[in-house]
Every structure is written in C-alpha cells, then in structure tokens.
Length: 321
Image 1 (cartoon, helix red, strand yellow):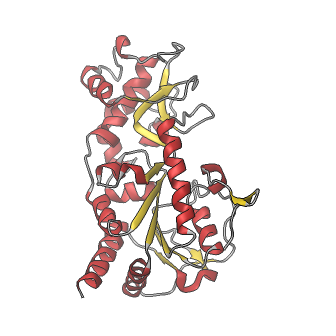
Image 2 (cartoon, helix red, strand yellow):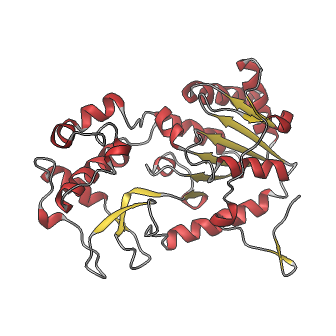
C-alpha cells in the first residue's frame, strides 16, 4: 500500500492532498451483460467492510433534480422572459447571469434554493442509496449542494459536502470563516418576490464587514470553508486512513468528466494503490473504468434509477439467503 509519510508518521489526509488530476490511460466500457454486472457489483459490496460513496451531479439528475428542460422552463418562466439570452437556458447557467442589482440576484437564488433544496424533500433514489450503505461502515464524499444525503438519513458526521450547500450563505469577500442558514430567509423571499425581484430590506448583508452576501457555493477563491466544513474534512481523512487497512468498496454515483479531480480520478488512484479496494462506477454514458483494475472494478452504463434499484435488490436478495 502507498502511504503518506511525514517525519516517521502518516501525514494528515486533507481535501487538497486527496485531489488528483491524473486520468487513467486504459479506459474501457466493460463488455459484460448488464445482469452479470449487477451480480458482480453486488458481490463487491457484500465482500466489503467499508463503503466510500462518491456522488456527483448525475445522481441528483437521475433522482429528478435536473437543471434544464421542463423543470427549468416551468419554474423560471418569469426569469426567462425578463432576462432571456444565453444564460437562461438552465439553472446552472442562470446562476452566472450578471444580475444588475442585489434584489435581482437574490430573486433568482432564493427561487433556485426553493426548487432545488427546500421544496423537493427526500428523493427515493437517495433513500435507496442509503439502504445500500446502512449496513456498512460508510462515508459520503459529494460535490452535490442539494442536501439530499442529509435528508435521506445518512449520518451528518459521515458526509463531506465539499462544494457548499444551496441553503447556506456567506460574506461575498469571505471576510470571516462562517456560513449562515438562509432557508427561512429564502422562504420569505419566495413569498415577497415580485417581477423576479425581492424587496431591498430582505437583501442580506455581511454582519461583520457590511458587504453583500453570496451563496455558499464554490465558485472562486472567496468560498468559505467554515468550522463544519473543516470538521467534515478531518473526519473524511480519518475514515480514509481506516480504509487503507480494511476491505473497501468505492461506490461512485453520477461523477462525470466535468470536475473529475474531486472524486473520479482520486477514486481510481485509491484502487490503483490499494489492493484491498474495489470500484463500482454507475454513470450513464460515462461508466468507463481502467481495464487494469480487472475484477476489482465494475462500470455500469445505465440509468441509475434502474441500476441502483437492481443492485439493491441483488444485495438484499443475497442477505436473505
């Protein structure tokens, strides 16, 4: 096994040291029938003591939280008509619109938080993932900001949401390392919004420097990593140390090539360096895996509603035998 050694001791694993920018050179789509893939993936789960879940935007999209299409046009009709242009084609792009005022900016972001964080409630697909993990010593690493893992029943202390949360706000300049729960404020904004604008008195100001606030979403160098974020980072590092000595399955869900350095490439690095680790990659159209991993990896190129459901059935079936 490869270990991080510093002054005779294992060095701390941080978010930055975990990241990897090195892709594999031997990606392949496995030529195995779907039903056999499910059986082999279930076997990897059954044999593991630990389960590290890595989840990206593809999981939430499969669960129903799509950023475009009818879900965008139905919920943001007024914004599309008011602003138009290339930004108003989906919720992700709309977040980069150069809103002319704070009232306009929070008009959009309060709506986005309502649609993606506050109103949906727990989604069935996330509940199924929890059922897959609950009997294992699990941990969740996710770039998703919709709070679904918390809602699905995962232990708060076993989740590391690296990129922020749709329910949190921070100082625009990051003048102090603290975030603020804005879900109540967003509900109030949603009720008061007119012509895509919120009232001026609702615009949040930093309580320390008086500057405007921003969403706590990683987009620039001012993203606030607060005490809760650093505690999750520490627990994640401690969990990885335990995984080095235990049979561990890495369950990667909906992680593509948009930001592969956070989960996809690091997961491959873990499997490459630790023979006790295996990888299950679920991702429609992007389930390629390094051929060198052999039977220690399974890439299932299917809609996750189907593959996670079938995988859960297979694991539960094995448990009843």
